[in-house]
Length: 112
Length: 112
Image 1: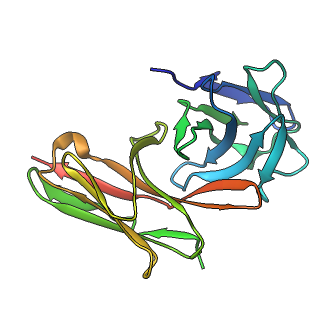
Image 2: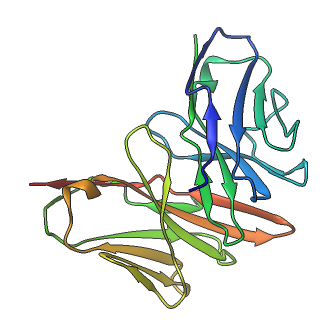
């Protein structure tokens, strides 16, 4: 069964450093998403991506965040200068034509 | 007003019990509805879509009430393995965007 894969599973970084989280969506899906979940809180929408451009973004997704699909398979989330409050689980998802989201297993980001 | 609201629980039930969760949503133009299941520190996994006429998948039944803007999930004959957090997801489609929005989730604990 096709699945969304994310790497790394854990990322520890110092405040102010850049991080890149990677995702390989399901190959025949066209819509991709990044969500985050701070421990004990709800799953929050960050950004959606379609046809090689951002289609929607939330207030959380400020200038420190960017997304790319550099090579037709990988979908990356970059945080330019991490803050302590960026510590969270980051989930990538791709969406099928029925509107259903399929998630990767997430990257746990810890900013020290 | 929160977009998607759920009773956080926890619902603590014995094996074999029937349990029901509700979820309310604020935007009457919402068009797609889903229930996801999330185990501790794991990614959300699709449990079932929710259709206007209601739908059933084994022990799970989902209902949609558009007039009152809520969806429900009924679990019959609860198993220990049903212990998880159940996430209500509501999507609005419009202007080319489709953003699945998550509730905080309802925690279910099934005990022997």
